Image (cartoon, rainbow, N blue to C red; front, top):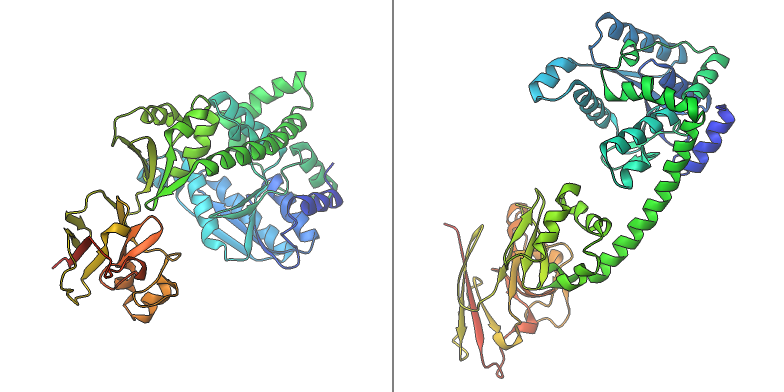
Length: 446
């Protein structure tokens, strides 16, 4: 049963961080019974709210009827209203996508543009929507996450909550009848043109004939699977965390460690999903473990590189550089110039130019790394016994923001040897005991 009391109890349980008194809510209202009831509940709780309505202009006069209804509804409640009118057909044709996909993209992009830092969007998804979503995922073929259905809360690019999720359509309609709430019907919901409508109008009624409590049962199962997913994620994350190693500044995984769970797709998916891979690539990623040295797989954000008996995980961030240097002599081309390396058998006459570094080669462990600096870096500037955050060091140089962003370092693992073009690290300076010197000369692009 849906009552203000039950709704409030569920709110306090699911959204303890969202206090009614201090949060401003945008409520997505189409004019249908679900969103009208949601808005009425928030209004009854005396929430600070704004109604948001999208007119997709897909149903002619009916779309305008819905917009006018929502305008009248907001006026009766005396709450602010935002309306977005958009030619969805034109948008879908322009970006070559389906109508439903276009409508969803339009809707959420607009909602995102409305929300300020402390705002939260509320949508009227309910238990019947959850049933439809879980069944659609099951029929398509999915893993554990797909069977958890619609989440109660999102807080990524969109700060969103779904407080009606535990309640069924029937309970929502009963609430509307009890409070004599008017609403409009979307005629497209009765058509079976879309997969969700087909499941809603044809398949679920047949299932309900055998299992009358199908909505409640699937909702309960999805909630339990959310708990199971959290346990699985924690276990998988802990496993990979123990296996990660950072060598010469590169995140690596020993292949022998990966092979412990190679036959378990859940573990591999738990690793690769955050690097832009898709579930269908699991088999190909496994092949990389036995590929030739230097083989790799790439996503828009990362590369998995087979190097000796390890997999290196390297970011594709084009704004940063990350180059591994395997030999002690030669020239390395970088985005902003070049580095020339020479190994010397005796201490040379030191050139005072800041573009030249002289390092004690016996203190180096090859390969070394050339990379863009990070905010967490620190080093021991030449002549100073105490470490200094690189960010502070560069700040004192009063570089322009653009030049500061381009600063790179030479490092051995996590230890900086040289802030290129500025200062070497005191730990790698040449002394009277030095027997071999690495001279590095940097030359900017002309």
